[in-house]
View 1 (cartoon, rainbow, N blue to C red):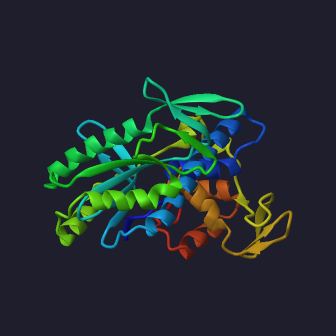
View 2: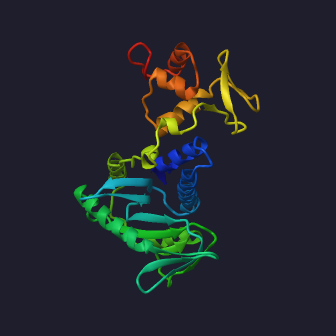
View 3: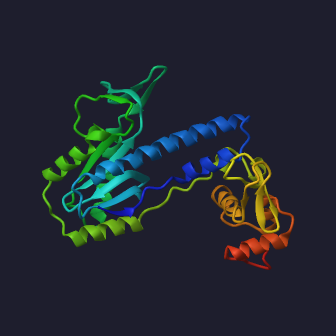
Length: 308
């Protein structure tokens, strides 16, 4: 199986992870950030587990796209995992829910844990809607004869499923066997090169969902913790001394520690930064020091080195 679009963290996942390092723990927003991060991280870890079982399936010549986001007739839709084969396009919705899971008469998914009960839309209904939208895209691309098979996989090993024996609502450990059953059900109708072409045409239509977590919580650069943070002890700030960053707490030295800080800024604030703002964010006084940092990183510089 060839990976065309690898699994990656969403922008919201990355931004919440960064902001947790740079936001006061005592503020009530911190708890909301933590909830977002935990939800995103749980989903990401659940989707990572799909790979092990997919690799055990007979998917030679297939193509994998993770997190593919496409524009439908009216709205965007996102597919957790797409497996393109010569016989069928399998789309997988990954759910990392724990506790007892059951479907009621109203086609709702009920999650019961020791301390709570939550109600969700039936995930199979969700993935069938994605399948419908995907078929419209495939029709536009000239692949109307390629079947689309929706599948829901519950990736949390602490889930107890009571879903009425629905064949396409399965626990993670059954994924390999269900994939094999699906492949055996459909006949090969597509030329290998046609499937390869489709995989890359779909990739070209992929649109990343953009997020702005600062705007979401009505924050700005002055709301967050500045400075170069020590990745070793994860507690102290680092100060620049003779071209090297030194942690104020653990005394760890790192010549390239500013890269992580600038990356944080680019992901949660803006990919463009002025020399003045970089001095503020890195907590460096000299504009020439920042200019040298920009130059050493080979960043595109405009004006007289005041921005990048």
